[in-house]
Each structure stands twice: as C-alpha cells, then as structure tokens.
Image 1 (cartoon, rainbow, N blue to C red):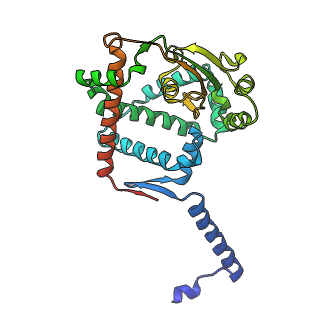
Image 2 (image 1 turned 180 degrees about the horizontal axis):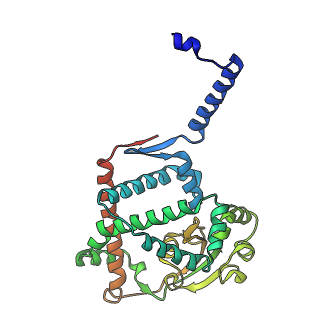
Image 3 (image 1 turned 45 degrees about the vertical axis):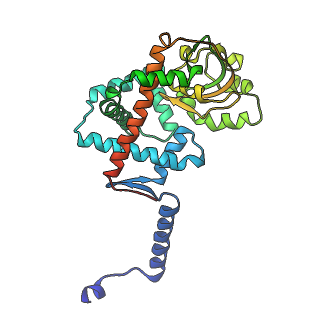
Length: 304
C-alpha cells in the first residue's frame, strides 16, 4: 500500500474527465467501429465493411453479403500465405503501371487525386492491388486451371438455355460512365436520376463515347462492346431495369437495359465455344464454393 500512497493521483475532476473520455471511446468503438467478424487471428471491422460497401456502391441491405465476401477474401489470402505464394514486386508494379495507363490516361497524378478524394493512401491502394493479384492467382491454381467441360454437361447446357445460343441477338443499353477521378459523384448521379431522365443525366455526367446521345448503345451485341463483367450484368438484367454500379480499374459503370431482341438459334457445333465457356464457368463457381466451404470449416470464424 505504501507505493500507492506515495503515487501522485489526479484530482477528482480530472479523474471524472478521463472516465468520461474512456466511456466515450468505448461507446464509439462499439457503435461506430465494432468488430464485424473474426477470421482466425484476424479481425474485420464494421468500418472495413462500410468502406468496401462505399467502394462497390452497395446498399445498406448488402452489409452481410459484403462482410461474407471479405471473410472469403481473408481465407484465400491465408491459404496463399500457407502455400508460400508470393507476388514479386516488379509484377505488382507492372500491374500498377497498366492500371494507370488504362484508367488514368497514363497520368499518375490523376490516380493520386482520386485516392486523396477517397481518403486512401497510395501504399494502401497498392497493397490492395497486390492482394487482388494474389487472390486471382490462388483461384487460378486451385480452381480455374483444373476445370473442364464434359460433353454430356455441354449438351445439357445447350438444351436448357437455347436463348443463350443464338446469332443476331441485339440489345439496347444506356450507359453512364464515370472516370476514376469522378468516382465520388456516384451518389450525385443516383440523386439526379430520381428527378431527371437517364439521357439527361448521361449528358451531364458521363464520360462514355455515347454520352452526347444520352448514353444509348442501340442494337448491339454486348460482348462486342463491353468487358465481360459488364456483359454478365447486362445478361442477367430484366428489360427496363437499372444495374448497380460496376467498377473496373477505377471506372464506374451504371447501366439500363432498354430493349432486347432474340436472334436465330445456333447449332450445337456453331455454339460449341460459348457452351463450353458457360459449362466451365458453372463448374468453376461450384468448385470455388466447395473450396471456400472447406477453408471455412478449417478456420475459426465468428460473425458479430
């Protein structure tokens, strides 16, 4: 007790202030930035999930889905670490230069401006690029390179989905495209669509080559114009609906499917490559789910 009596203690008012501050921090931690999940020894914070939701422009209702995707990502990165998979820095730097060239017109300062607006440091962004590359490499090694399409599965796919395998099918879509440095205008665009036509908003905000036409791409085959991620979204959209934001290398796409005209049915031989790709894609998704389920079963996971 002697060492306690000799220790100088703050006055009662100072102790009260310290207690209030501590309680405030505790409340802030629980309510604003609590733990969303634990994956082994790693933690996913609620703020991490909300940051990813803002990046994806996902609605509040998507919180659980985004959190689960982040859990899966951590599992894959842990598996990569266990497998001693490394990504050489020169390969990462090459990917960074490619992104800057394609998404920022080769101007590194435009990337830095976008990161400043999103309050993300360059090292954090570069680390994310490196993680993306590792996740892709792990998926290729564990899933994609081992997937094949059996003839009986291809026949079943061809018979079950005749609309997928036709020539001359045409789709009309309207597009709003935001440059990477304008990604923070997503909410402004969505708000503008509530009171203005899609065409008017496209003319005001879009960097798409058809913006002056209201963003309309008329009677096209999407795979001849857009990247696979955009084509996949168009394929599953009912006519007259609006997509979520799609981000590719920093560029933000918002789509509306305006019209769709079916084409002439292709023979199995004519559609062979597309049928094979569809079967492989389905097989890969099933194999990936099984792999993730196994990783989950081998790892302590707690969702809050």
